[in-house]
Length: 252
Image (cartoon, rainbow, N blue to C red; front, side, top):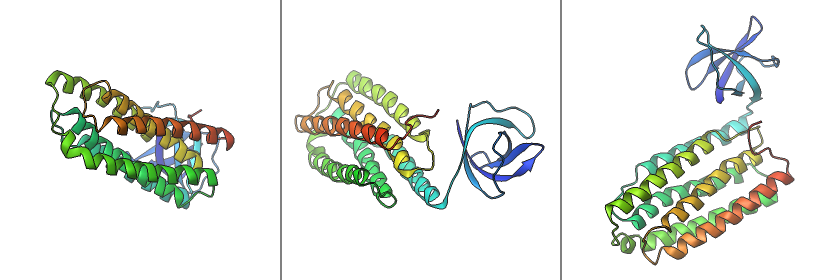
């Protein structure tokens, strides 16, 4: 589990913090007490919180958030929350082709905005190339899907297929949302972007593969195949870069 917090001070051997999400004081059991009041921190803990007053947790890791990282992270959260809201709120009809497009467009839009966000901070040339490629490819994909939306929306599916498709999409997207919300971080925007974008790409691949299992308009098929090909390639590139710059992809 991850807690966003502000350090209040040290009391009785505990690091006292204000949980920014739960708006409550929490006592943190940790050996690392070299923080000052007002520091913004991310606390990684095992998910166990006591029912005492104040509640207590045992930290596995505490990371101090610098201003640059905090601005990057805040923008990422805004992008993620907007994507989730827009994908969940998309107007769905009895057309799998239509439903795929109206949920994938905000998904692509988020990838573009995430890439624009990292380009403000990274100096890594390979990561810049990856981000710029995401912007170009997914901008083109949005244009392609928009162009065929009206025509594809006319191909209707039986209610049982639409229900099966949407049930699969719900599972895929909820896993993706969870992974992106809980992506491991360590104050390195390069590594953080990779950890955030990999599950985003994985979600797009699985959403596309799911749609191809059903009857969809022929104009949409090559768009889906391109999403699968390009984003599998992107996942591979990001994993290779993560190894090269020594990013831990998962929380230890």
